[in-house]
Amino acid sequence: ILLSFQRMGLRSEVEAITLLGDRFEAQTKVNGCDGKTLNTVLRAVSMLLRPGDSSRNSVFDAASELILESGSPFLSKCNEYEVASILWSFAQAQCVNTGVMMKLADRIMENDIVGQCSPSSASRMLWSFTVLISLFDEEDENISGLRDKQFQLFQSLGGIMLSSQLTPMDCSRAMWAMAKASYPLDMAVFDHLAVRLAVDEMLERSSVRQISEALWACGRMSNWEGKQDKDMSMVLIPPYMESAKKYVATILARRDELSPKDVSQAIWSLGRLYLLADIADDFALLAEAVAPKCNGIEISSILFGLSRLGYTNAPVIEALTDRFTAPSVLESCSAREISTVMVALGNIQYRNPELFSVLSTALMNNIHSASSESIASALSAYEDVNIVPPRVLFDCWASEKLGITARHSYISQVVGDA
Image (cartoon, rainbow, N blue to C red):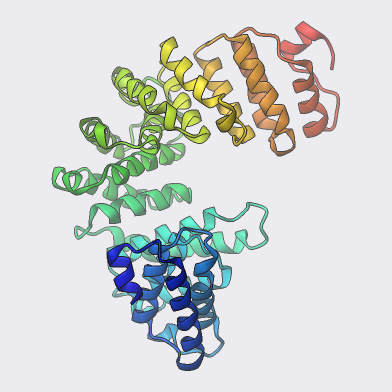
């Protein structure tokens, strides 16, 4: 019944879905369940109901009990497809359970199924585990153990991705997972995935989201390429750079399909890779067009990328900053996003005292969640545009983050010792 609901897209039938979920929970406690049935139910519920919807809790609670039950034969009977798909449903539903993550990871690495693991299942497993880890707070006591398990998964499943039997989704998701997890130990795998996705036939079958996420992954993985410079002839060019150029060309050719997230990921990646600055105008115009629909993260990513490309067109920058400082957007922005915008404006020497005042006020309102690096970067941005920073911003940095009376070279010249 749930599978039929999913195929018909009956998302509005929340009460019926909830009743079916409750019935499923009661049945599994009495009769148990096999992997295929559990996968079908979890997938249907995760696609019918939104993340955080309490109506889905009974189904995922029942699944968790089944997976975690001591001495239960359930997992030992699941194949690699079922294990990866069950974890995918947990990720899709944003349902975090450390025990379930560990159990499913251990199962897919067992000898009896890892040898038969397909590239699609390996990609799905790596993507799902990485998505779920990203939902944890960095201070969570479980994060260290989860990262260790994630490393083991990449070690066990990464080699499976060195295949010619890959779909666009396999490539994009595995690339995203490696980049999000900051896993640089198998760059040959990443290069292979990037090259496979860049084949014309693969790009034709890809969604723009898959291509933009692959491009984002290239930008993120460039962190591991050593010192970078705008003059790429002076540094070692990574193999995936040519693939990234093909992604960019495809994204531009399909610009009508782009969402604000796609545009922001693409521009952020262009800046991170110092790639194709000569087409910055094309992407800037796309950014200006989608700006009214962008959130704070997307605007900060766009401005970061454009600043790295040296883009200084004032009307476009103004449209982006107007959106970022809209109360509905700025109030939900983190200190890091605000600092990123200030640094980007400083990089292109966009001098606007009123704008900097609004941004620094918002930053100070988030001072308890701001890192000392974010505040120091904001102070540096003031110096770049030759505007005197508010004394209270420097005092906050010195007292809240350093616990001492400190001085910043530029501020000391203007306002004296803190």
